[in-house]
Image 1 (cartoon, rainbow, N blue to C red):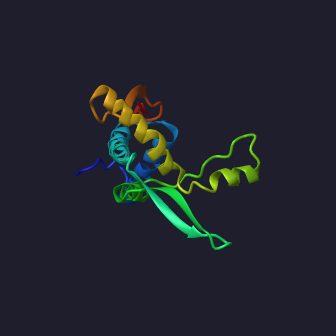
Image 2: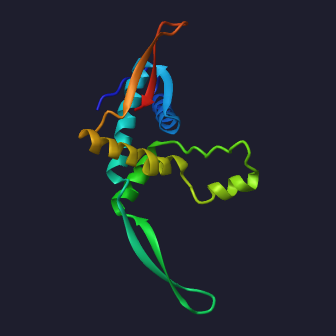
Image 3: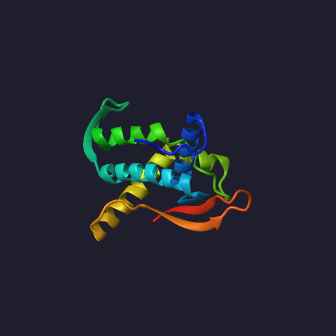
Length: 169
């Protein structure tokens, strides 16, 4: 598939698009030029579709372990199915890693305790929030896709480039 060149060498262009897609999915909206917004929108729609398809693919597994006293303990664990794991890895391959921000009234110890369990916050947000949200929206409206919206702001002051706000619907 042919992409826009955006006036940049390949490595810079790929980094720019990855950064903007990551920012869009993390923050919900970004401000950029029209050409960049169209490319970012295309990539973000693919990743969101992947999350919508795979967000509910889990399986309950019983694991038995021996504790210190020699007793067998059976635990019920929820695991991803192979297709969901593959989707997570595909998202991790494209999106940048963003650490979860520290809240204002949170101490360092509280922050570490809160973020210890979640290794990839953006991927978890995609699977736990964005995927189910758009899955419900697709069931309600009966259509898929259309997860992003481009709102035009007008020309940029310096060079006259068309500026837009790209947001998740």
